[in-house]
Length: 639
Ligand code: CA
Picture 1: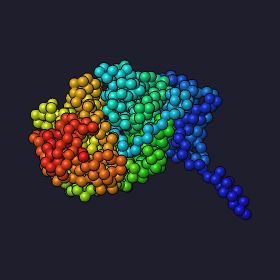
Picture 2: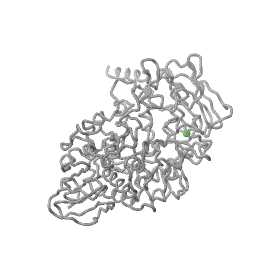
Picture 3: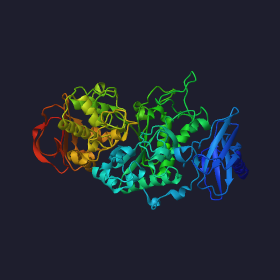
Picture 4: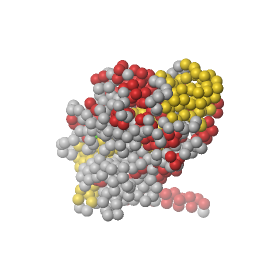
C-alpha cells in the first residue's frame, strides 16, 4: 500500500502543470535553440521571427510557437534547429485578432542595437579571462562607502586621461581604478546600466547624454556604454570586464535598477507580451503614475514579482553584481522587496528611494521609508540628513544647517545615528520622519548629494548668500564629515571630491557633457578637497566607532552634547566598540561664521580633523575643558 501511494504521488507530480519559474527568452544550443515567451491567457497566436541582423532586413525564418498546456497555458515555446549563434529574434503576440508588435520579450539577455531584437549568444563565450575566479569583495554593509557615478560624467572629459570615455571599459583603466582606490570608496553605484531608450545607439559618434531612467531591456547591459552596440556579446563582455577590474581592486559594483516603470507603455516589452498585466491602473481605467514617468509597474502581481526576483538573481549570477539601488522603491510593495532580499545572498546590499513620485494604485503596504523597519536588510536614503545639511528639496535657494540656519540640529542628529531609536533625539523636531525608520543603522543611507537635485557646490552657491570659495570648501568638507561620521551607510556623488559643479543645473538628466562632466583638472586646482575626502574616508574605515553596524552599540556608545543653534556635537565611547583603538571620541559641527566651543572632560586629546585638514594620524593635540571649533567646520578629536 505504501509503495502504491508513493507511485501515485510520483504520477501526480508528473501530471500537475509545472509552475513557470524558468526564465523565458532563448536558451542557445549549438544544435538547436529553445525559445519561450509568457503571455496572458487569452493570447491567440505567437510568431517567432529569426533575423540575420539586430535591425533591418527580412526574417530568415518565421515560426508559429506552440502553447505549452502543462505550464498553465501562459507559456509559448518553439525549438529551432541548427546553430543560431549570432542571429536575432523577436516575438509577436496576437490578442483579439491583432498582433501587438515585434519585441525581444521581457527576458532577453542579449540584444541587437537599440534593444529591438533579442540576440542569440553563447553566454559562456562572453566571460573575460579569469571570470570563473571573480569573487564579490567581502565587505559588510556597515563598512561600505558608496560612490554614485554615471559612466559618461566620470570619464568623458579629456582631463580624465581615460581612453574609453563614457564606456564600461573606463572602469577597467588604471587611471580610474587608482583614483577610486586613492579616494578609498569600496563600492561604486553605477547609474542605470541596463539597456535604456534615450540614447540612440546608432549615433554614438554624436554627443548624447541621459541618466538612463527609461528601461527597455532589464537584463541586458546598455549598448551606449559598449564599444560596439551592434555586436551583442561585446557589451556583455565589457560589462563583465568592468566588474572584474573593480572586484580586483576590492570595489563592489552596485546596480541602479528601475523596475518601477518602463520607458513607454504601448511599445514596451511588458505590454507587447502581456498587455495591461504589468502595470497598475486607477479605478477609472487610466494608468497609474506613481513613478512620475507615465506608468507604474505592479510588483504585487505574481509574474511581475517573479520577474523582479529573477532579474536581480540574474545580475548576481551572470554579472557578479554586489548590490542594488532601487529607483522609487516606494512604488513597489513590501512583500516583493522582502522576497528579493531573501532570494539573494546576505552580502548583496539592497537599498532604495523610500518614496514614490506620485500616488500609487495599490492599497497594500508600499516599500516606503516609513516601512523600512518591516524590511530587514534593506536600506533607504535619508532625506532627513540630506536636507538638514543642504536645505529642503523643494527649493534650491533655501539653506539649512550648512548655511547657518538654525532648527536643523535634531534632523542632523537623526542622520548621525542612522535613523534608529536613540534617547538623545527629539523626533518631534526632525524635518520629515517623526519616528525612527530604521531598526539597524545600516538601513539608512547617509548623504548630502546625489545625481538628483543640485550637486553640493551648486547648492551651496545657490543657497548661501555671498559665499566665498573658501567658505564653500569649508562647508563642503563639513557636510561630508557629517556623512562619513554617520552610523548609516555613507554615500557620495562622484566628483564631489573634485569640487564638481553642474553650472547650477538641478535636473541634469539630459544635459550636455559640459554640465555633467567631471573636471579632473580640479584635482590640481583644489587638492585640499581630495586630500580631505580621502583622509576622512580612511579615518572612517580605520575606526569601527564610526560604523558600529548595530543599533544597540550606537545607543550604548554614542551620545550627544547639548545642542546649540547651528552646533551639533557628539561623543563616542570607543572602549565600548569592538575593535576600536581610540577611547573617547568627540565630533563637532559648527556652521556659525565664527568659532564656537564645546565643553569636554579634562585630558589630552589628539585632533584628527580641524578646519580644512583631516589626518587620521593626528594634526595636533589639545587640552580638554573648553575646546574651540573654528568657524564653518568640523572638529574630530580623541584620546
Ligand atoms: Ca539602449
